[in-house]
Image (cartoon, rainbow, N blue to C red; front, side, top):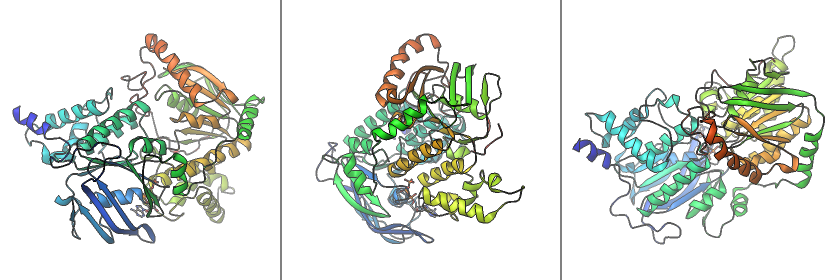
Amino acid sequence: MGDLVMHVDNFTPGPSAAPRGTGRGAPERRPVVTARGVTKTYGRTRALTGVDLEVGAGEVLGLVGHNGAGKSTLMRVLAGLEACDEGTVAVRGQEVPDGTGPRAEAFRGVRMAYQETSLCPDLTVAENIWVSSRRSLPRLRWRRAAGDAARRRLDEMFPGHGVTARDRIEDLSLAQRQMVEIVRASLCDRLDLLILDEPTESLGPDAARSLYAYVRDLTARGVAVLLISHRIREVLSVADRVAVLRDGAVIAERPAAGLGEHDVLTLMGAQVAERTGDERAVAAAGASGDRPVMAELRGATGPGLREVSVRVGAGEVVGLAGLAGQGQQEVLERLWRPARRDTSVHGTRAYVPGDRQRSGVLPLWSVAENLIVTAMRGIARRGVRRPAQERAAVRDWVERLAIRGGPDAAMTELSGGNQQKVIVARAFASAADLVLLDDPFRGVDVHTKTDLYQLIRQEAARGRSVVWYSSENAEMVHCDRVYVLRAGRVVAELTGEEISEERIIAVSFAEADEASGHEGGTAGRDGGASGRDDGTAGRDGGTPGRRDGVPSRG
Ligand SMILES: Nc1ncnc2c1ncn2[C@@H]1O[C@H](COP(=O)(O)OP(=O)(O)OP(=O)(O)O)[C@@H](O)[C@H]1O
């Protein structure tokens, strides 16, 4: 037992020699990882071109850039997981020689939490921790030691996580998998640099806050943190410095203090369109019209839902909002598979799943094939495919959404955000009358998001109906009507001017105490965290079948 405790306690962050970081604005930091002139090419794609970047002990360096800018590639190079074609990487002041393999001793202490998670779905939490951190764990009774370490770190980082060491990864919600991934990366015998690649995209606000509190704790102990995120405000509030990557090159490095969101977006090359009063008027007018009903839930009750009534008119954009895991996915699921008498749906449907790796990406297929698979039937004449028209449609969508990589790239060659764009394009390229969106813009950069909001409005204007769950309440202003869910019930229906982030948050929380008093956690799929907005209530666990966006006949 003494052994186990010793080994578990070995997971202590920070080298003893590191100077005490003071968080924001600490001067003169000892370099942990330094890149000089780093270039990386994949086939014809130049992912990085002459990148210089240094991250010092005790600081948070934020890295921002558009989808496909090269952020993940740079992180893989800095973590020693990929060699660069030109340039050098030094760790703790020592240049790492060419040909050093991914597990090289030189990179020990540099750990990365991946955007898509690196966890093995068939293994338990404890087993995954052991695979990743076994050099610091005992060989005997390793499972218990790994489980103890995971539980302790989960409790420290994400109170109320609802994960046990014996849970299999594939049974966890997206948010829980992300938490385990971050914990996995942080557990090692020596932590110098923790790289977080879009860590909060699938976490709720509570979990994100807990994570950043832990990050501050780490930097105070001299650990460096490299944070990649499309959430610029979040980066500015956590980072000491911000580096902007554009088309594979670092084009700016600035202290975070004094830098505004708009400054960063401008550096990234984004033209940020604020939503105008006119656009809102269009949405509101749409809501008030007397539209034919396209889809409806009438007092739907069942797993995760309590007497939910939702109406979707033709050409209407309907939002599903509220804290995470309150029944929004169940509503989408009902509309996708309207098996019960309390649900009616007219026309065909397409689904954009929230968990692209599990049920969205067809990894062996090209971008073109992934994109056109649902539209093929509509393009065909008398059952015969028309390749020229298919190619033209693909080209159009690749251009429209600026999908970097092009139609012939393998899906797995695309950056995370670009993969997500293909899945969104797949749904809208189809002839589906009703498009169901499950938090579809995670990992998509701000510039593209703005284009996608416009796309949704344009498609609605053409008569399509959209039902859209978003974990970002601010996005709901692009809807005609918003249903706020709480503990499996609709607690508010907002239209037009009533729709605002503040209003949605107020309604969600105002109802929270009352609902948790008598609902007994009916909405959370994994039952453990109903009422929290930390993403621990299952987002997608237990959802039957695939949701791959292939339209089905209504
Ligand atoms: N294994 C690969 N094979 C081919 N091309 C790749 C590979 N990995 C990345 N790329 C390409 O390199 C470029 C940079 O990709 P990267 O994933 O680093 O971007 P990113 O900034 O992390 O994007 P996102 O914000 O979408 O995650 C992209 O054009 C991408 O298509």
